[in-house]
Image (cartoon, rainbow, N blue to C red; front, side, top):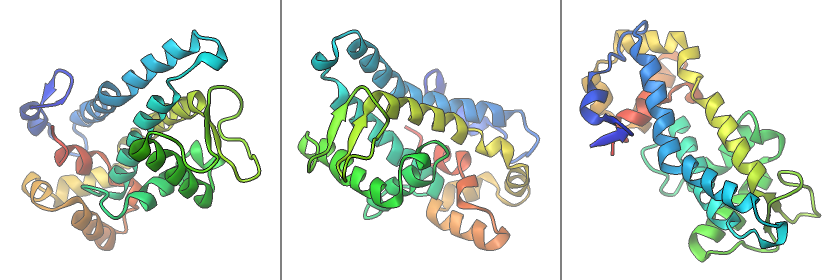
Length: 225
């Protein structure tokens, strides 16, 4: 079973991620990025490229682009929180990512992020349309202030999501202490046996580690497939 293109679960299990100095950490980060891009981002890139060739009023792929991007937002948000799924936690996970990630937080308050979740994420994925008076567009600001209405530039939203993924994937290499903690105290058997939620809680209480730092190991080891 493949974890990412040209990289299967047997190869992943051989990575030496318990060693904080292991060169395999670079590979783990690359696999994480390849997984997200090959399954979601690359497809949205194609849709953006095809649509941008058309006159503005003839562009129709914005809903599909945002459907893909919303799935990625929730996925990355879940990884950051150490969640194996977002059942009953979807709105909070989604809104927290948009209102706290490096690039999106400039555009989203928590309240606006929750409205985006309802009008776009739920509207598009559940009813194949936006909710309320919200609109999908392909020009202008990412999400201009329009008297409470949300008009999202799906191209800029997509580009910002890609930029935030590049920032997010550097978290593990930056947290040298975290890698040391994993290497000394968490054998692979523990990583496989504990749920991400329980493990994150345990790590935070044990060593005061920030939730955002508990990323690659928790997500990829229990998200093979």
